[in-house]
Image (tube, rainbow, N blue to C red; front, side):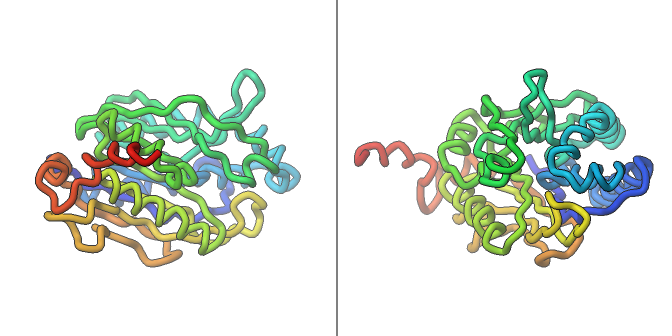
Length: 287
């Protein structure tokens, strides 16, 4: 089973209208599907460019922008549902800060399906910025999603730095982990990158990262964005020696494409030079 994935190095724009947003995303999606990508990955908090549609007193306020973005949430979901169905592809649309009935916010990563449905993974490990300034709370459930290409899991940015989350997902059948990310320092980008590579190594699976890139001085939330999209693999027979199938140019706005050979995941776990996935439980002897 082979599938092409497109992972975005996505720039944050200042938008004049919702139509501008639709046009931008349509262009991104069209470019990906023209390259025969069936899975598209966008970055964490890419949706925050929608705050620019509101007056300055809104987009300049961390608290007010979260509240006002809720007026666009349904439109956001409907738009991506239509896109995924129209192009017969899976779209992980980055994340959208969603307000629950309790009044709490979740950093929510939607996965839109070709049949017009969707599901989501909420971020579980919150950064200091989310905890201390935004007051966005952790989700409560770790999921895997059934697709035509097997089970897919999502680790939202910081989640990728915690191995037990990915481990539970691969034990539930995921051979591909999507990592939408948003980092404002080079060190932050490398933390997520190293986490992604480690998860691919220890679980002998694919891990794909998508970052925001560039500057948006108008936004306190996503003013600086640093990163490179990449597709990480097991480091073993049949895969690249450095565990990198594809990587973009740092901070450049672009798609990064790679073919995923998902049938090779089971093979490398059974016939690899090493058995990281199989040998995981042996660690417990020393705990």
